[in-house]
Image (cartoon, rainbow, N blue to C red; front, side, top):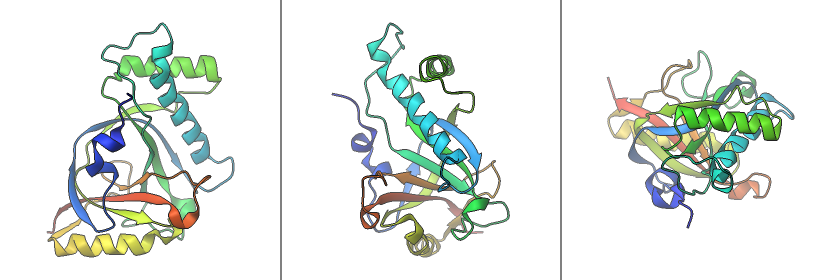
Length: 214
């Protein structure tokens, strides 16, 4: 049976609708960086997502070819994730999506080394005819975070973020997010496919890195 990160690590993918603290270990991702409104048709974000899935499924389906990846095990491709920030903004401003900077990502098993990642890029370029150069193998160590499950449309997230911020303050903590590429960021994990799920039923994990309040 394929290894399912969501089921094996429920504490990272299936939080309750009540805020909680979690310590997130380093994780390996295939990632693409970009800027701009993620809702733009044929925009950079949608192009990035297509490349991410092409890379993830190429690695998953290596079992069907003659390339043997050391330590390989079959796995369910994990959900799409996003790390978001805006220059000069603390947290995120949902009213100005064009100002977003983002890292779109999908988690990979630890057996995906730099060498195997480069192999997958070559396969995607050869078979899918995509430019795989924007994809990078990225290790993200989030550490201490507060998280909550958001149920509903993405545009309704500010109310859930407010609940999370109140919880963080009550714990004697504060958000530890950067408005530059370097640092920790507002993090979302998309558990639902918006093409097949009614907006009111969308499930999104919202996670904020935190630190002791100064």
